Image (tube, rainbow, N blue to C red; front, side):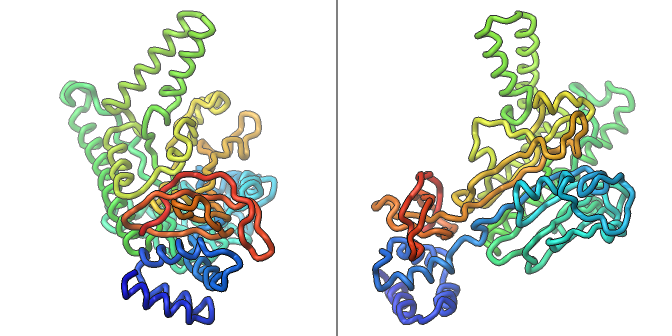
Length: 455
């Protein structure tokens, strides 16, 4: 052990309170804090060092532990989301338990709610009385009834920002981002620009299509805006991770990543196999095969909004910078569609959708995630749907700890998580099912191999 670590050890042993332990550990690097947290997790409950170990684990606990965050593109907050009223702005509109939002809150008990496409004007905010939450808004000043995002939080953030440094001014006015800063982590909520306005790029030359020059100008403008947004966001998220340490980015990203994320991709391939196994009509199989080949071509060469090569490249750049598509990491074989074409009502029932809404998290948060769920049926009554998107919720483990690789689960503590970033090592993640009277884990659940801690 280095002289520096020995000096820290002496200070910790002499500490008489959790506050003093926190003061000591907040003066060292995150890597060193993780080291002491790992040692503390292995201290037996009967040891005279157990109280100190608990202090250390308390102050190094992941700040997101036990929290649930919801993200939902609601396609207008004024239209039967918090209550059963129409789109008119009326004073004191509260969340009714029977409303789509009321149902979602009952099911998920969220700590933070991130909304996209609120479609509010700044003056509309006063119409809503969101009891139990601190509310923050960024509404479009460029167009009425367009775009807009909101964050509702039970805990008051340290600060909130509506800016994306480096983003085109045209997009800044459209109310597309909110960043909420909390102790130890940050939540970024975005409504990513849809490139539908760009139109469709022709297979051949622009010269061969009607109004080709004007259409090319429109295409280049909106694709350029999207690329600039994605680049600015990539730099912003990296900077936030450097400064804060833990980033959660959520929202409607308006892009599907691969064949697993569109209904005519892997889901259609699965249908083809099922039809062949049951020796069903050849024409049906041919139709499905044609659909799947078109999807493969789309992913290879790009297509319309949500499937363009530029859009996927923008998201891929972010994911290559130390961030993770949490749903796809946890559920590599599931579809998790979040969007269904509203003009084709039957698509939702048959699950012919796309996955374009995400929770993207820092590397060090992956072990903390208990689940990411899509609530496809929230607010759906017959053929009526509250939005063309479904809400999704990310839930973080309340009772997990890292364990030493040589001792299996060692002595996991409930409600603790070793938390670090840097040069990453692999350890097991343990879930604590039951604790004794002293709060020590006596029933360890399943191990989940994940990237957990740095040494």
